Length: 581
Image 1 (tube, rainbow, N blue to C red):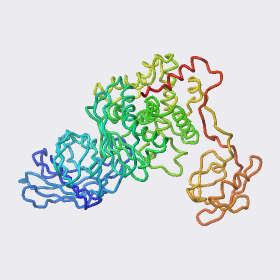
Image 2: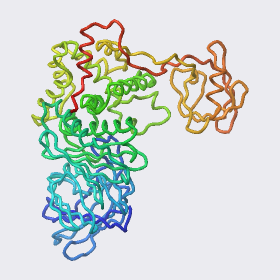
Image 3: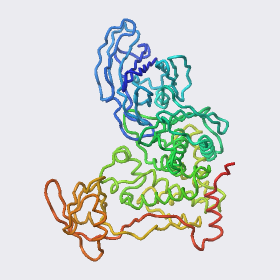
Image 4: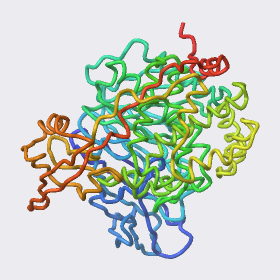
């Protein structure tokens, strides 16, 4: 099976593809169906990639005669061919204007594509190997994690099956910046597109090396690939990443290298996607061991896949010495603030949030904070609590690292995905005690972990950073006095305030977006009701409510007065960074 993708620097926003396959590949009959994935592993949303296919056609490869075809599903094409046909040739275009880690993009300077966004594949032949030829403009080069042979204007890649083809993003362009470093005796490359004239810090490669080595240290220092590639896309805005077996795609603002907080955030993104080399790409839930690319693939364990990885990304930057302790503790305090201000965590468990990722997490609306929770940041807090408990139970001799390494050895190394029971077993081994009740208490019901206790065990005090201000439980739309979100259990909800209501006046005083905060602060009282004049779908109404202290005014993590020596030593062990000579 042979693919060809043509890149033309003058034909922007279009990728031209062809696919040739001999009919002898098909078991019988005179028709075959080709399908395009509707999602890509690592991003749990049906994205309907087939909507970007244009100019589809099918021919007899040898005679060039047009073959009959029809759409048999939203992402399927059924091609009908005479019995004497020896090979079929498909030709189609993919609209490529999605500069994200999941899609396809092409302009005069570079092109990027995720395999799921461009590939049509014959149904039933998902394990069939394929050759992929890319025709390049004369001064362009192609970069991917696949092994291939390149020459002027041409690059050739080989895929063992559909899984590998989907798992191999490609970046091609002119004048792309290339950087390289070795870590744990493996070569690593970074290819950067869209950075323009922004300067890269001189210590960047050393920081990347330290992060990769700390990721590997969790798994006894072993890297499960021969070489690794970071494909880095830069634009004026946007941030995200997508993991692959021996590469990752990163999207960030081109200003990400300064200030220091933005640079550390980019290093955390690198750590996150690289940690997925183990947790997500190889070691993964049994439900995701094999993929159905045409529909949702459900699991209740995304809090382990993404949440544990979200815990390790910042933490490994601390351990690598590329993030100061103060910055790390500030990030954790931010996770706590975000959790407290998410009422949905009390009504939907982390397991349920994982299962519903396909319809909730990637499709947020004005009620999302009331109906679901973030399995990334809250999963990270669950991992923090597990790590703290293991360290306490073993007097600092073991930690979550040992559980992760054991899970990798017990499941992926044995050729299978993991279950909740597998995860519990590995946590039990690391802690030397039964962890099931502790774990299930965080992931099976309301998410109310004992974070204050977890930090106290490290000799740290989790506390509110300032006195709670009065609030009514709404969030305004940006640049307007219209209400974007109404929080459950707060005064506004009890009074009947709804999303999209526009606040016209408070206690008879006209407000706008600029004056709202100042007027509210001066008029709000815990002792008297406040009158809101609202506009709702062209009608005016007045509601009364009484402000109350905010349940979250921000948090900070400081040394705990009177902490024991054992707790202080455990905290120092947890927050220890490598020496960066």
